Amino acid sequence: MQRIEQGMGRGVRANDDYCVVMIMGSKLTQALFSSDASAKFSPATAAQMKLSNNLAKQIRGKPLSEMHAVISLCLQRNPGWVKASKQALVNVTYDGGVKSLETAVVQRNAFGFAQRNQFRQAADAIQGLINAETNSKMQGWLKQQLAEYVHHYDKSQAQEILLSASMLNCCLTKPLGGITYTKLGVSTISQALRAETYLASKFKNVNEVIIWLHGLADDLHFYEDDSERFEKAMALLGLAIGFETQRPEAELGKGPDDLWGAGRTALSGYRMQERRNDDDNREEGFRSIGRLHELVSRSLRPKLSANAYHRSSRPGLR
Image (cartoon, rainbow, N blue to C red):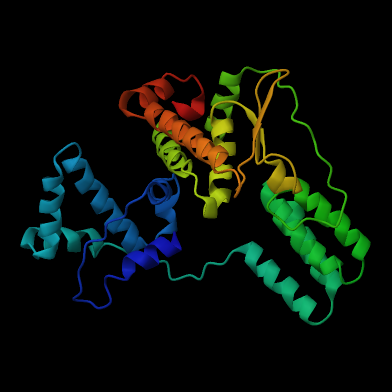
């Protein structure tokens, strides 16, 4: 959010500057309309976003010319617009206190210990954060930092910690050895219930689900120089429709790029490879991906998504 706000601020550098900022793209939309987005903006930006949302509600469903008219009100310094804009900011206040993240403070203290070659004290500080953390991926990230400090006085233990970290978060540095493949388990619940449970745990309302799915559909365009984004989107798509998923290539360095558990006995896996001497196979793969993207995009069009999710009985999706 800080980067988004900094980018928006590039258009206004002095008190008498003014501009219109157009925020476009499914990923930016997803970030801006997440449940806690407004809390991450500064008070002034949050107030301006609220004003923009009110304007958007007034022109929703109207021709694009209506948006052009609203933009002109700002750029041509319409007195009514200037007054409304100033009123939106008149009651903005800033908290004079200094806010700090406890995690960042402890990490800085640990770094200070390490600078003085007090690696055990540094490790103890990070271990305290790990003990208090409940998010598994964050625990893995902190354990990787713990392994870096422990490595200075016990290399074997550091590898064990790194192995534990990689089991919690597959995006971290891999240990020298010890990682074993864990097969996808056989689920005892239905695919529909798995999908509903996943979406209810991730989102607070229907709009968040729909915005996220549109961003996911955009990521299902495959580009050879950005395959990581596509492979991650494939794994998330599997979870969204109720499959158990794995990414063996990313997690273990071998195997298919994505693996979906499709029932009690069936598994579906795929691997995208650049075959310089097999253009026909590559082109067929790209056509298949295009069909997949079209299928997902089509399923998100107007009425189906909102109505389907509104009928859900899960509390998180009502």
